[in-house]
Length: 412
Ligand SMILES: Cc1cc2nc3c(=O)[nH]c(=O)nc-3n(C[C@H](O)[C@H](O)[C@H](O)COP(=O)(O)OP(=O)(O)OC[C@H]3O[C@@H](n4cnc5c(N)ncnc54)[C@H](O)[C@@H]3O)c2cc1C
Image 1 (spheres, protein in one colour):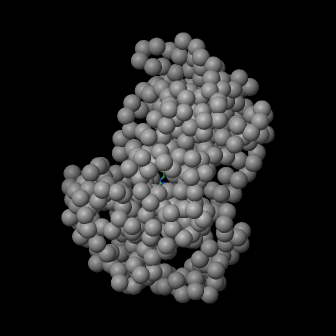
Image 2: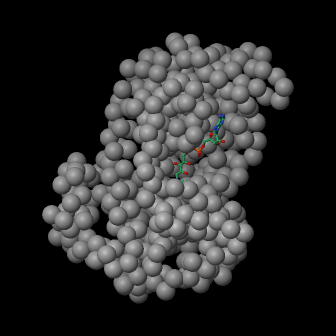
Image 3: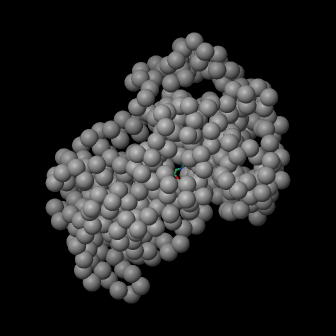
């Protein structure tokens, strides 16, 4: 069976479906090929930080994500063990006041978001095919995509193939696009917790306590997505049959407000962990092919940027495709350049966050205290962390230099 859409998108996750919506709304013929027949909780991103929420609005998909059970959260408290809840919460960052017209972070379940975006892509006119296998892409001025659905082989001839197939991108591997992963310093695990009725629905929290870095992001309906991060030296932590219970107990930390609300809640999904690292691709554009989202290189989840990155990628690529007839690799130069610098800055913020938040014990407490004191009189020391919320391009370039890393860590 042969068809000829304008664009074939491989992967109907966040980046792929967001792009398909924009292109289909713009009048292009789009086919989206997704491997899974149903989206499952694989413990992925569930918070669009404010700059990502702004991208979501700009792409016109905020209603889709709110309709998928998402909600805006207006405060972020970073609470350290020595400061305690009483000091930390009153100093919570007002997420609804950081960017014009952005009501906060947008918290939404990952499988629900993927399903709603895929449905919206279909409603906008895209063809979304689920359960495909054996996808192969032949690049060129008229790329060819072949795949198998059930026991039928299909062939699609298009003007552009987009790789939106996530971290382990088949398309990237298949086309030999070089990809480097950084060495992880910590492991991060997550679990969705239900019936956490005592957790305030307007409050995101990050907190370092003992030997874990804790992050909690509420959603409507008394649900909280909780992530814990711990040292690589404790590799086997939260891996046995009791891991869900142990994970909840580890949340019962003294410095955390409403800790018991989470610890007394019920697991509503798997408890899975991943090494926290990032990756970089030298090339994300080839003749007739573009990569977006995690497939184009992912950011370290410790600072929760991947969803925002994915939606900005979708927006930037859609602007090229809807902007004129030139779809040659050169036409994506602006996207490649902006993304390269964006990911460099995000990588810097992630490395700084990792040192500040996951250096445990007295050394870590001293580091955080020094950093906190400096932020009062040196805006450059705050800038790489604030950029996590407001967007990497909003901070000055000097914030992302080796010299500033030394200042942030109190070594210069
Ligand atoms: C533990 C953890 C926590 C995170 N927390 C956050 C957070 O709080 N905030 C944040 O912004 N980001 C977070 N992230 C990152 C975020 O989840 C990702 O960056 C984001 O989901 C990337 O979107 P994507 O569309 O590129 O990939 P995905 O969402 O992974 O989608 C890829 C899609 O491609 C499909 N696919 C894969 N292979 C094929 C194939 N061969 N053929 C067809 N289809 C295929 C997959 O089934 C999937 O549907 C986190 C990540 C992890 C691991």
